[in-house]
Length: 358
Ligand code: NAI
Ligand code: MG
Image 1 (cartoon, helix red, strand yellow):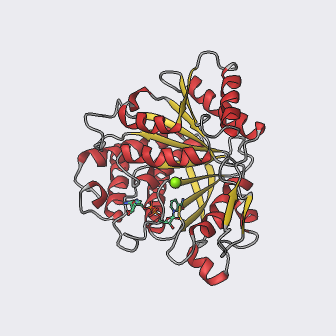
Image 2 (cartoon, rainbow, N blue to C red):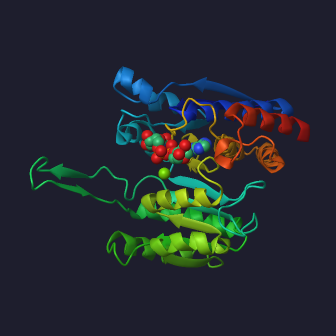
Image 3 (tube, rainbow, N blue to C red):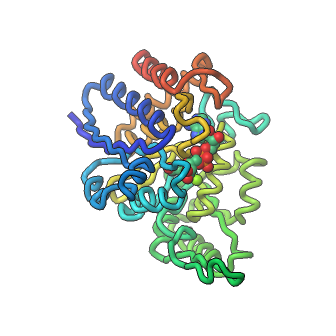
């Protein structure tokens, strides 16, 4: 038996609904394969937990998580708890302490989903965004002074280190070199307006490019790049971006592949010294929380990425095929894609399909 241990953190709102379906799909994958077994432990760390305990997770939370092979997270966020509390109390400590410095966000149109971009199909929308996940613009360095006076001010610093920039670029170049269909890397910059960190970033793009002479590289300003995601998404292969730019770009990426209900993400510690974390790009969606109508596609796709990370490529692929078969069939469709199916109905249909296909 190949054994894996997964820490489940459903979190808040629709996080709970989508992780439930994702787990069912993982269970079905184990059942049809017969050779793998997964042990789960579920944690109720969330904003609800925060309201009871004054923290998002226990003080030894990271110590507990450290021993798992991976973390499967829904979303955190709850009206009444400020978003920076939920982010800095749970997600960011996990991403940082576990050195999950690579955030993989595929921008790939699945079979059965219609892109909002006119006349674009699965062959046009198929690239990967690599977002730097440990430093950059999301630093807690800075401060606020003179609050409540008319001199009120705030400063937030960005952190770009040689170590941090080189490792994310090397990962992205390597990916473009090995898996990229066009061996093309696009780096997001803004070196015209941000005149210290972004020229630094660009300089390292050129430096690391020398290690990968076969990869064709473009350095494009983030604003223009956003427009190109809409006007010529077919030219991209691997896109690499700093933490903030990658965050913003990938909501746009999610939109062009059918919305936040679809888009998955993986927070990877490539050295596998610590667990990696798999989570949909979307948040807890308070507007539809508790209604049972969230689209679990992103969470199911994350489950597939997790199996791929374990080296279970055949099962990972089987999940993606079953998922796309259900989407293409178009009978069980959640409201975000124009249908009226529930989260559970969709998840169960994917499981059924997975059994049938195998
Ligand atoms: P959101 O992603 O929760 O929702 C944005 C819109 O997309 C809403 O209209 C929502 O109904 C829709 N949507 C999202 N996921 C969906 C799904 N699976 N199926 C169908 N529709 C879906 O983003 P928002 O509203 O900005 O944030 C809500 C809360 O979530 C906030 O507290 C925020 O901080 C948190 N959040 C947490 C994240 C995480 O845990 N990684 C990521 C993003 C936001
Ligand atoms: Mg985001």
